[in-house]
Image (cartoon, rainbow, N blue to C red; front, side, top):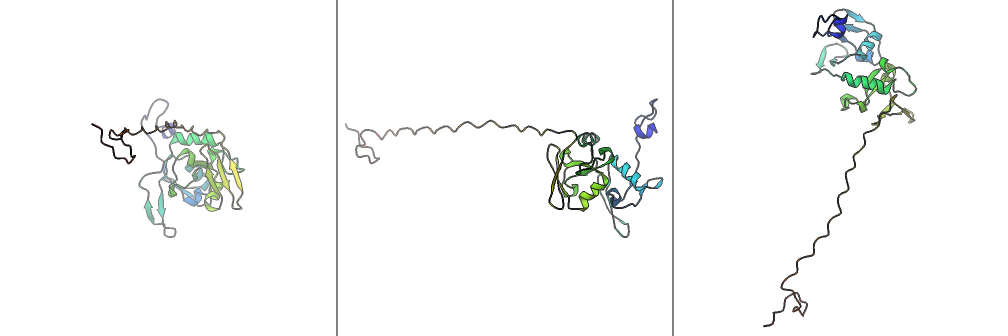
Length: 215
């Protein structure tokens, strides 16, 4: 067990070894919209709740797109999607619980969700990731509840009826102080033009043409 979880036993045996546990979970099961079981490689079917719990602690995901009727694999993502472990731990401390209004399910038993979906260009950053319970994860994706995130961790929800609700993180994040650039110096007044040597007191007719100098 130590070797599987940590890659090394207490005596140092197995240092450098790592284990991969592959579980196939239908996306609707992860969203709480289906009770179809997951599949543990080398073992067989596992119940949906166990599949959701294991997926919630997974270090990476590989998206496999299948035909809804035949089950034929249509596409596999080139690279596994991975939320850095340090970021995931930080978000658990920041959120504390599910960020849906009125829900107090702990972040450790919730799903990490992109507020703006990754498929629509949402970045995998702290300002775009929030924990939602499986049920509210489903509500967010399959209803007209719409969240908007603030940089300080506040999540603003708009209900289908147009009502506004705000949920605060367990640990407040201060937004980065914006550095104000120093004001540019005032423009320097242009220097007066150099006097024309041909314009002098002898320009008596003010016509702009210099009068000949007297001999």
